[in-house]
Length: 53
Length: 410
Image 1 (cartoon, rainbow over the protein chains, first blue to last red):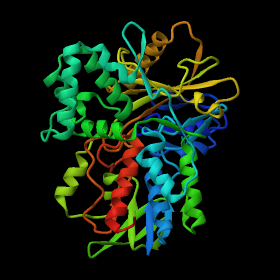
Image 2 (image 1 turned 45 degrees about the vertical axis):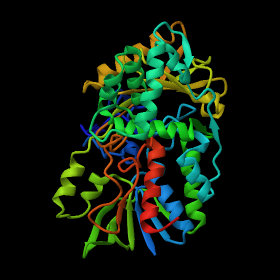
Image 3 (image 1 turned 90 degrees about the vertical axis):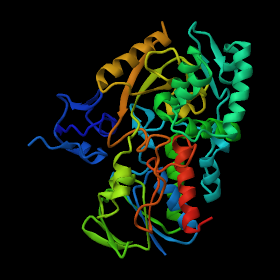
Image 4 (image 1 turned 60 degrees about the vertical axis):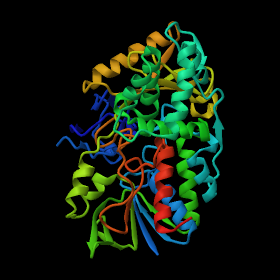
């Protein structure tokens, strides 16, 4: 998943991620657990997450 | 009468509950998959964290929000905090909030009484900030630090960025309503109760529904376009702030456009901690005027243990953002926590930051632009249009009350 500069780090995506794949520290970033399921996309209030491809 | 509401945050839901009770046909559109905006629970590792607010209602069971919840019949238990708040002094000693005067010299205590009662009656008309207002009467480091700690916790601003006028309105409300309280079940107890009322009065709430356009005809909002569908409306209430709303229609009112594009949101960082033992020991606010960054902390599990797994406490700190270096600001906050609770064991659960398009408040306190727009039947509610002297969600409730008065709903 790609995270744009719009991300402020609210953490909603991390809470709804089933794979413990999102780290929040001022902004969101995905770790190696991410399987690109895309579930996080809809929980972002700023539409800051998109598919990598 | 058909009311369309954009956004199912606290403002949209309060407006929706009031309007369905008054017989309006209400339809709410929320872009996210869940309702409540920045005032609902965020389930995380067995804890009930929150999407925004720190599970706290600033004026507790007697404040404007509690009052409005009663009016619409929302069944929410608000546990008033006792003590309301404490202050951690420089020497680590903890004192009750209302005893802060005792930290001043006797002369200053007398002066504070006089200045406060005069200024509450005759509020400054100028743009003087709360910091400069304090400085005008007192040269006192403790008062400056306390002012920053309070403004940082309650408004996510430095005292120099809060108009004194607004702060004196807040002080009035503190005398009037007292505070604070924790809703049993957390923030979502409030927003879920409101959605229950809306639905039981035949109102509809749609999630994952993005309002793309507001259609204006003869200076009136006539329709909205949602997920490519057209919905007719007699009145439109937007809970997404003035600026975001203005992007949904064309307006030629340049003065309004100018005014709303200059509004600065307030920014902040919340650090959520898990602890086996109590760090604070009550559910009131723990003000930290001598910490580098953290303004205050609460431990909500003292009011509602269900907000954490059995045997755990949920502790949340708040700090306003001082610089644009978010990572450095977070690190200073984490360092503060180590120094505030030396030798205590806790885990950092989640660090949440709020700014720009998803801020603490869409309009920082004292800079709200009212609830009206250039379109007669289009109103703004929420934290971008708070009522005077309303801290956070209390301001949201006061703003909704203003809109209801405008459209004649009691």
